Amino acid sequence: MGNLNIDDVRMYVEKHIGDFHKKRISSLDNLKLSTVLKRKNPYLFKAKNME
View (cartoon, helix red, strand yellow):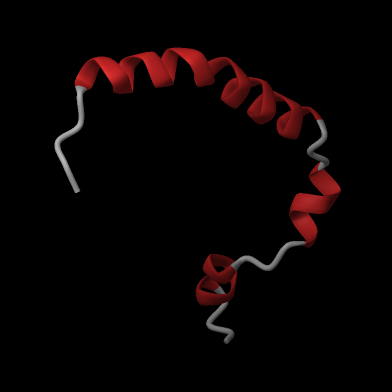
């Protein structure tokens, strides 16, 4: 792979950072605590010595 031009990278980030943050905020707005709590938590299983 060739060298990256830092100015090209900067322009790409400036162009796309708004969309990135909009998607992140949208997903956080749609997040429900009950959904998160239903997910498997491997750290909790380790703490309870379950596998």
